[in-house]
Length: 198
Image (cartoon, rainbow, N blue to C red; front, top):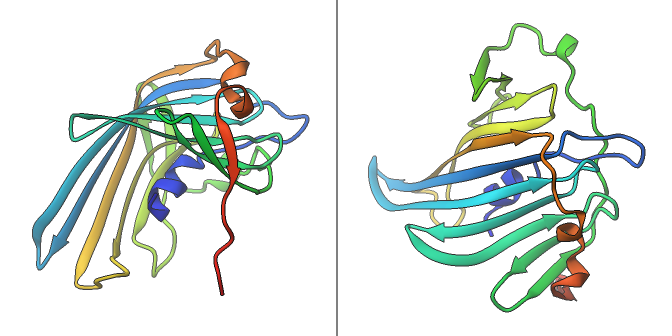
């Protein structure tokens, strides 16, 4: 999983007593790798997002370049743990973490940043300071990243550039979601991720 995928997958979270807007959506992630301005690789991955009222998120990727895939991820925002999921093998790799509190974005702090609308949902365009080459549109009301556009040089080959655009569509707010889908132990064999060797 790329660092950008992981960043996109962690859209939001919730504290023990706070609520998030439950959401379902389609997610399309388009990636281009270029060298000297020419595209050397191009991929489109499509999947779904389901987010609970406590901020837990389940991503299920359904296709890559039109071919079926069985990958996904889960952020359990009660325990803080994240999981890489293999729906075919029914295995999950766990990485410990911390829950995220809600309300990190506030309208009175958004200033004069540009506003856009995605399927009728207003979002604020945030652009981090250099050296980051990234922008994303966040719904402050629902604490939801509706799209993200990011570019960076590849670590393995700095002459190549990675460009990713991720967008949500078919967004349903206040969706009725089965809470059991966020219980990873009901469906998957869970394994702890191996610590990196120093």
